[in-house]
Length: 133
Image (cartoon, rainbow, N blue to C red; front, side, top):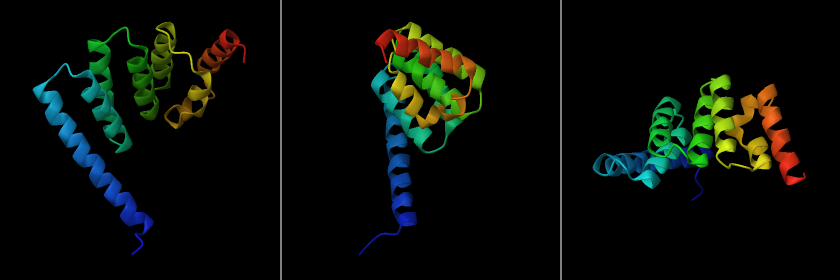
């Protein structure tokens, strides 16, 4: 039996909902479990629960302020919510902390709305210069 695309999508969403619930329980039990918290943020984002994902990403930034990846994920959440200025600021902070993958920035659909932002383009340009691309 072949599942329809709609059924497959619904099953995927159910799995993500289960995962988010499981991770939420883990984070409540162990509030400093950064791995579980980061995965919770990803699951919420994939479910389209962007405000909740943003809350998780802000919490991660408070817990790991020197981690470039958490700042990058914060930028993604802000961009998905249409907060371009804040998103570029978070992205800039990620780069200052060591994030350096210009090609991923360009390809990341979470950041699609930033691609025409001059500050975003400048970040990409500088990263490409650093890496000789």
